[in-house]
Image 1: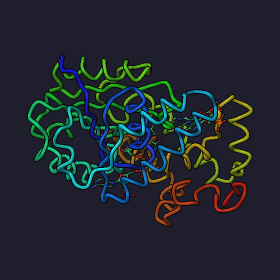
Image 2: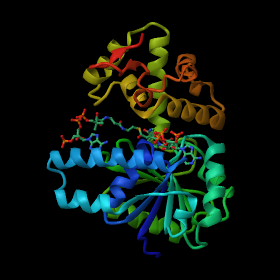
Image 3: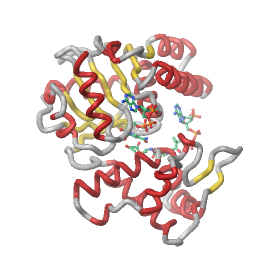
Image 4: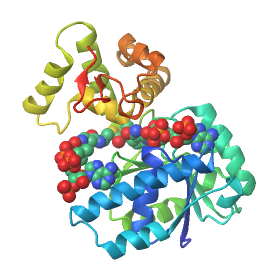
Amino acid sequence: MAELQRIGVVGAGQMGAGIAHVSALAGYDVVVFDVSHERALQGIGGITANLDRQLAGGKITAGERDAALSRITAADGVGDLAEADLVIEAATEDEAVKRRIFAQVCDVLRPEALLATNTSSISITRLAASTDRPERFLGIHFMNPVPVMKLVELVRGIATADETYETARAYVARLGKAMTVSEDFPAFIVNRILMPMINEAIYTLYEGVGSVENIDASMRLGANHPMGPLQLADFIGLDTCLSIMQVLHDGLSDSKYRPCPLLVKYVEAGWLGRKTGRGFYDYRGETPVPTR
Ligand SMILES: CC(=O)CC(=O)SCCNC(=O)CCNC(=O)[C@H](O)C(C)(C)COP(=O)(O)OP(=O)(O)OC[C@H]1O[C@@H](n2cnc3c(N)ncnc32)[C@H](O)[C@@H]1OP(=O)(O)O
Ligand SMILES: NC(=O)C1=CN([C@@H]2O[C@H](COP(=O)(O)OP(=O)(O)OC[C@H]3O[C@@H](n4cnc5c(N)ncnc54)[C@H](OP(=O)(O)O)[C@@H]3O)[C@@H](O)[C@H]2O)C=CC1
C-alpha cells in the first residue's frame, strides 16, 4: 500500500478548506489549488479562523495549530500539484468543471499518484473514466463542516483497484474519521436520504404549508435535527443542493426527485445561501432573517 505524505486539494471553498484543515492537522503536507492564488489564500484564511476556533474551544493546542498552518501552502498554478501523492478534487458540483480539472491535474500528476473526488452525487465510475487512471481514482466524500463531522463516505468506481481503496481507508483512519462504504449510485448514501428531505422542506415552503421559521423549528424541535432543513440547505449551498437533486432526478429517472421550482428560483437569483449572504435566510445583518 502506498504511503501518502503530500495531499493536493483542488477547490478552496468550504469543503476544500475543511479537507486541507484536517489533513494538515493529521500531519500531511497540503497544497491548495483554486482558480487563482488569491482564492487559495482566501481558503487558507478560512482554515486559520477555524483552527483558531478549535484552539479557543480547547480542541487543539497552539503548537498543533501552528504546525498545521505551516504544512499548508497555496498553489501558484496546477504545476504545484505535481509532487502530490493524492489529489482530492473539491470544486463546484458540476461534472463539466470537474472533468476539466481532472484533465489539467492528470497532465502534471505522477503516474502512481491517486486522484479522488469529494463529489456529493456524481458517478465515480463516469468521472474516473474521464481520467488517465480509473484504477487509482475513487470518491472520498467528507461531510460539512469537515473539522466537526465524524463521517467520510468511501465510494469505489467499477475500476478502482483494491490498493487505491486500502490507501484511502488508511488516510481516512489517520484523520480520525469514521468511514462508511457506499456503492456508486447517484448521491451515494447520505445525500440519497438527506437531499430529498431538504427538497421536500422546500416544497413545504413553496406550497405554503409553513413559513421558513416554522419549517425549521418543526424539524429542530420536533425531530431533534441540529439545524432546520432550510438552514442546512443554506449551509450546504443551494447550488450544491440543486445539482445533487438534478443528479438524482436524471440518474434514477423518478419524479420523486424533481427539484422544487423554488430551489431553482433561488439559485437563478444567485441566492446560494450563507456563502453569498442570502438564501432562505438573509445573513447580511446581525441575525439571519427569513427571506420568505
Ligand atoms: C452535501 C453533502 O454532500 C454532504 C453533507 O455534508 S450534508 C451536511 C452534513 N452536515 C450537517 O448535517 C450539519 C448539521 N449541523 C450541525 O451538526 C451543527 O449545527 C454544527 C456542528 C454545524 C454546528 O453546531 P452548533 O452547536 O450549532 O454550533 P457551534 O456551537 O458553533 O459549533 C459546535 C462546535 O463545532 C465547532 N465548529 C463549527 N464549525 C466549525 C468549523 N467549520 N471548523 C472548526 N470547528 C467548527 C465549534 O467551534 C464548536 O466547537 P466547541 O464545541 O468546541 O465549542
Ligand atoms: N457544501 C457541502 O455541504 C458539501 C459539498 N460537497 C462537495 O464538495 C465540492 C465543493 O463544494 P463546496 O466546497 O461546498 O463548494 P464552494 O462553492 O464552497 O467551493 C467550490 C470551490 O471550487 C472552486 N473552483 C471552481 N472551479 C474551479 C476550477 N476550475 N479549478 C479550481 N477551483 C475551482 C471555486 O472557486 P470560485 O468560488 O472562484 O468559483 C470555489 O472556491 C462539491 O463537489 C460539493 O458537492 C461534499 C460534501 C458536503
